[in-house]
Structure formats: structure tokens, C-alpha cells
Length: 268
Length: 316
Image (cartoon, rainbow over all chains, first blue to last red; front, side, top):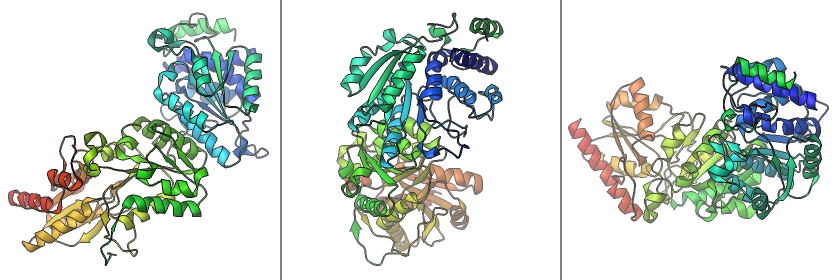
């Protein structure tokens, strides 16, 4: 898994370097979770694989759409589209838009996101539709902790609980940083676990970079008949020493030298 | 195409009944509301199909996001609340989630325009058409009577993609018979005339028809064009009429900025430059008052429309 995620980290950095823009910090904080999700947790057949019932696939929504490079890298490395498409990220006419776009019809992208605070409502609606159709598929939504400052997130948490959805799993990538600095200083979410519990969620707390913990907890949440939320403690910029825990790397591209240093650190 | 008997009916009740009828035929239809189901009359659907009705509470952003998710899950979604809250409150969700992904969500808003009445400015959406019209891939429809409400809702249920439909709050006099067929590709000629073209839709259609009768009495034959589809705006009928009459008046229960009046000006400036006079609320907020009082104050009654057209024709 480490080799896999290192290759993904390499591609995330190269995509952002190539595009001269993008969001490395939040992509590096969630890429371990996305890797485990797509490799071990989600039932996500490729569209052209007729052997598997495509309608029954699990759905993943990246509500923090600015981490798109992490999702694009995982999808490409899982065979949804050729890895050589990755370098078209943010280019004119590309299916790899700055933020995920279902309009752009990139295989594996379920919904459009980017404007924060909307993915969870979409996830709730999707979970309701699946339940109406008696479809056993599950919906996973990954939010950023900063994103949870959006009021609409709390509207949808309330709705999810009110609808008693057991086919929805909420994951919070808690990297404690946002563009302007520390989430604690700007508008603290703490105590997030108690808030989610008060909203009716079964809350798990994990190390979002520990593959075993991620896999075990996500599978447990997936198979649970309760409404589950996973708070994943992560490090923004994880894997590249000079990007780790630095708010400045939220939305900045590495230059040639920084990329070289980062790739050396990753040893890929 | 015109109704012989004049019946007064609530377009909201017609909306609710039509939804319930469509719900019986099509199990894929789901309906959402934000705590106003008794006002929007989506409660008529809810009563028959409780498992396909979701009351999202007083949380319009969540309602539109949830509507998007249901549409991603293959459902045909109707989401209703007052026009004020169905547009401005959740504009980002409508733009970035519904329209950007061309989802099959119909936002059917009641209580648009000044005719909300006593609740006043905070509840009078005078800009909703302007917001909705500016979003790519959004269709905008304002039916003119209850028969047309029914047909537009049926059309919406059978036509994929995002739509904004504004249902008038006031009870409406019947204009169309069941022989009328709603056609999204053209403006509808309601009355022939050579002297001036009046373009309208929604609640003001009846007022314009009455105003035209008054104009006839003083020898002015107005041509009336009903444009329920504000977007995509089809200019052909308008252009032909403008060519004939040489001047155009637009009447709408909306701000003169960004609504039907703007659509008419945009089309004519490109296809057949003509002087246009726009009747609607000016660059202003509304206020409390009885429906009829407000319509008179803001110049939307038959008599006020007549007076303004006379004024316009004198100076043109």
C-alpha cells in the first residue's frame, strides 16, 4: 500500500506542478484514505466490466473537491482511465477539471463538487434514492474539517440523522488547517466528535494515515446498520516534509526545485 | 384554445393535484419541500406517496442538495418552496450542483412577485427570474393560467434537465381550454393587433388581456404575446410582431431588471431593434399591502397597464 500511495503522491505533485496551480496540502492529507477506500472498501467496478452489476456500485463523493488530484490519481491507478491523462489536469478542454465535474464525464467521477458544503446533501439524496430502489450500495462522503464551517453541512447532518440513513458513511479529513491558517483559530469545530454524536451519528476516530485502521473502521462503518461518521486525524501535506502542517501549501504549486526535493523524499 | 367559461382556480392546488396524478403514473417521481408543503400544495403528493416525499425542514440549501442526490440516483425530482427561498437562499446549490451537472431537478416555486401581499418585501421575490435566467442550462417557465400550470408540470415531468417554474400565488381566471397545447418553442399569440405589441406571462396575462380591451375602446389594437418560457427565449414570434407594430411593451410581476423585459430587450436589440417599454417593479423592494392594492401601486392592474401604454404611445 505504501508503494501505491507514494506513486499517487508523486502524481499529485506532478499534476499540480505541471498545471502550475492546485491544492497539494488537502490532497496529500486524504490520499491514504482514498487509496484504502478504492482498493479495499468500496465496491467500484469499472463501467465497462459487464460482469458486475454497475448500478449496485458504491458511490464516493469528494465533498472537498479541491483535493481532486488525490481522487484523479486513485481513479487512474485503479484503471478507471489511463494514467497518461493525469497531466491534462486543469488544461483547457480536459476531463480533469480543477474540481471534479460529472459534466466533464471522467470515468469514476460520480458528482460535481468544488463549492464547499454541498457534497453531504448530495450524498443524503443519493442514499435516499438507493434506499427507495432497495439498492444495497453504500454512499461515502469525504468532507474537509474547514468545510464543516459551512452551515449547509449541518443542515444535511440533521437530514441524514432524521432519515435514519444506514447506507451513508461520512468521513471528515481533519487536518486542522484551512487557507487562512489554523481551523482552531479561525472558527473552531471542537469538540467535533461530541457534535456529531449529538446529531445522531455513531462516531469513530482514526489516524487517517494508518492503513489498517482506515480499512478496519471503514469496513465496520460500511457494514453497520447505524448512521456512521469517521473523524480521521490527518496531516495536511502528509509525506512531503516542507508541506506538512503548513497552511501556505493549501493552494500552491511546487516549483521545479521543490518538486525535485519532494520526489526525492518520496523516493519514487 | 381559449376557455369558454371563466373559472377562478388556485394554481397551487392545480400544481399539487398534477403532481399527485403524475406520481401515480410514474413511480420515479419524488417531491421535496422545505416546511411549506401546505402553502405550495406539495402536501397533496405527500398524502398519497409519503415514501416518495421528503420534507427537508427550513433548510433550502439542504433541500436543493438532497434533490441533486436523488437526481444522481435516477429520480425525477420536484422541489418546492416560496420563490424567495427557492432561489436566492440556495443559488450556489442550484448553479454548482443542479445546473452544472444538468440534473433532473424541477424547482417549482410559489409566491413569486409582488402578489405575495401582506408578508412584505422579505417574502416578495422580485428578482427570482433574473437569478434563474442567468444560470447556464436552466429553463425558466411562468405559466399564465391553471390549465397551463397543469401542462407545464406534465411537460417538466417528461423532460429531463433543470427547470425553474414559477407558480403564481393569486387565484387565476381560466384563459386556456384543454385544447390549448403548451409549446416550449414559441411565444403564444393571444390577440392580433397592429398598433402595439404587449409581451407578458404569469399573473399579468389576464390583466394585459383586459387592458387590451380598454385600448380597443379608444381605437388602439394591441397584439398580445404570452411568453411562458422566458428561457430559452425564442424570439421569432416577438420579432414578427415587432416588425408589424413597431413598438413593444413588456408587463411582468417582477423587477424590470433581468426578467422577461430584459429577455425581450436582449432579443430585439440583436434581431430587430425596437423601442421597448418595461412595466414591472422598478429597482426597488416591495412592501406590505393587499394583493390588489400592491398590483395597483406597482402598475400591474389592467387599468394601470392601459394608462401606461397610452402614456407610452403618446410619447413614442
